[in-house]
Image 1 (cartoon, rainbow, N blue to C red):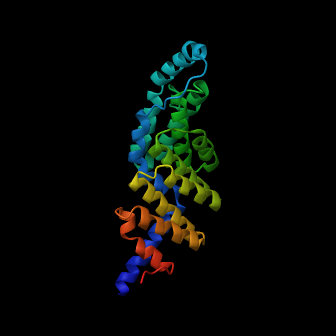
Image 2 (tube, rainbow, N blue to C red):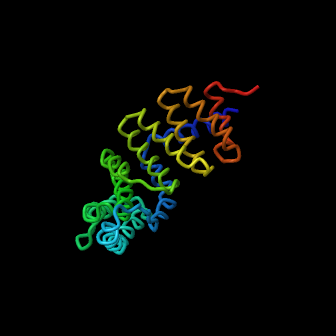
Image 3 (cartoon, one colour):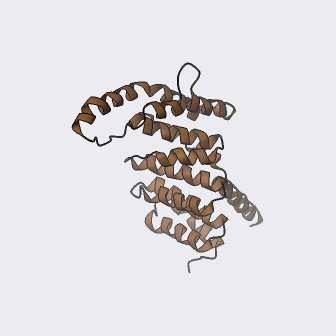
Length: 239
């Protein structure tokens, strides 16, 4: 029994570390995140003249040019810890010969590719612990792809958590779970993250509600399998 208690204490510490360190979540999820590098979000054009005489040519140029920033971001996402800071800066600022995400956003403002670079910039700033800048760029990013938007909201939550803006962090963890409810893995993960964060900041009732939602809505997920342990330590034990 003592051994079990020690094990659970260590598990709890690990869980708390996950929500209080933004970088830990980024590293855990970096490989799935890079798959967005080929995603191009379709924007609705305005007037036909604008669309065909200006917007579409600009979109085509942006799409042709963005592959360099995508390569930088892929390198950053797959790199060992010792290189991540250097490569995050390259994502943002380029390598001297090629521009990074920041100049790309300015040059191709209003294009799908520039929108994608907002995500790259936000993720890079998050790793560099420049949390205000990460929030700005991730809020400027938007997509109809729910899995990608969910991760963007989650990273905003991480940044707010690091800034001790707990209510904002919890709101964005909830948004990350809600935006893609049909995806059991993503939604259950962010509900768990929201619940664990609520628990760590003393919002016991909200934590219980979030844990119960996992159990009710996503009973077949890995998070649901062990959720009774988290409910029990908050005093919620089923008869």
